[in-house]
Length: 82
Image 1 (tube, rainbow, N blue to C red):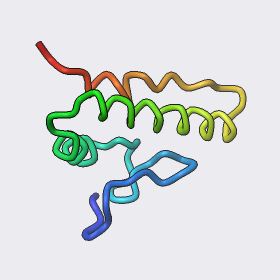
Image 2: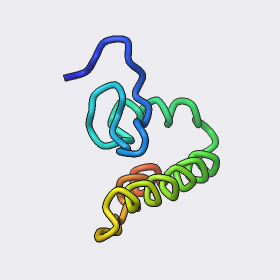
Image 3: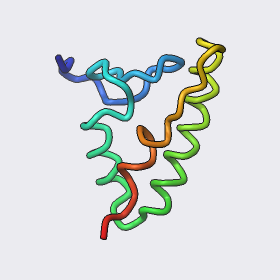
Image 4: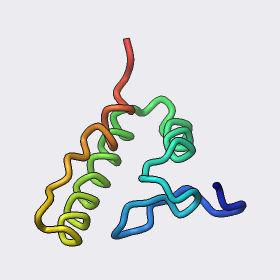
């Protein structure tokens, strides 16, 4: 359940949303990022790739036996369609 007034930002090192608790980027965060980077999809992809690398490193430190594949979670949704 969303928490009123809390932004949909990543809670590090777990990479869960501070606002709703699901994996970040959550749906509200995605919509916000698409709006913020409107007209600059390349900038959005670069930002998300940087976040993905940071998340991968932190999640790997928490669980060294598992190397998460975060491509779908961080990048696939942001690719231009068509």
